[in-house]
Amino acid sequence: MEEFTIKKVFLSFLFVICISILLAGCNGGDKKSDWADGLEKTQKIEVISPGESEPASNITDQQDIADFVQALKLDEWEVTEVPSNAVKGKEFKMYQEETDTISDSNKDKKDLKEIGNITTYSNASYIDFNLKNVKFSFKIPEDAFKYLSEYQ
Image 1: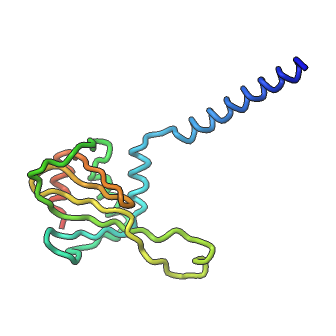
Image 2: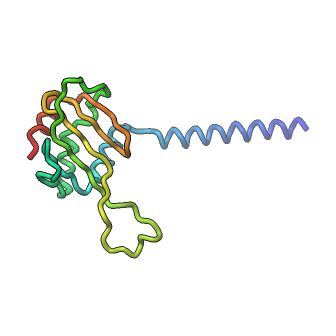
Image 3: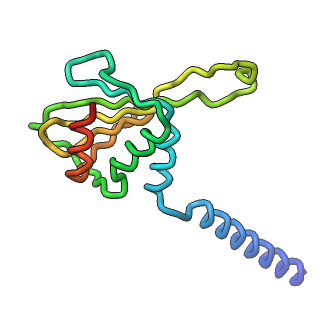
């Protein structure tokens, strides 16, 4: 009976160690880099000027999208509230092809789906980042603010 208990405890211990190693491996790495990688998978970005409903321009070239994401300097964003006197500026809507499902496997052309947007402020280096109906507000570096403000 004692041998059975020792084996049971040993196997439980071994199981916990294996799960811990697996979870640590899955959670490793820089979270913001993973975030940037996800944004670089964007296939289209619409640039909408303040007060307009139609895009002023679109970014569709993958290198231009990668440059856009790099210019945002995601590693330097600080979660904070946007000041009450901030005036909304440009909006950047990001789109990506919908994920394949079994029923979609025969479609040649996939529709683009909005995956998120960034709302800038014209008088402050803050943004609102909306992702799946969840809004995050950030203070961004001055050079990222300048890049977004001047983007045509």
